[in-house]
Length: 88
Image (cartoon, rainbow, N blue to C red; front, side):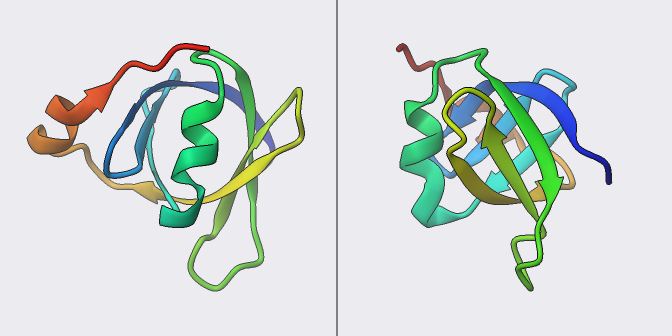
């Protein structure tokens, strides 16, 4: 998968992020707080990662911070209802 530019539209407490391209990504549990600190709509880049489980990384374009993630195949109703808005 080539590098893509996108942004996070929503992030739930379980670490599922919904991106502007309407894909869903499960962020590694230890990285959720960092992703939650990013401003809503901030540009991120999606790149493949060499980690054996967390196959992708989402990188904040401005700061260079990155979080590990895997693509979530579908969004459950419970996840959809748990999305929270964050402000920065």
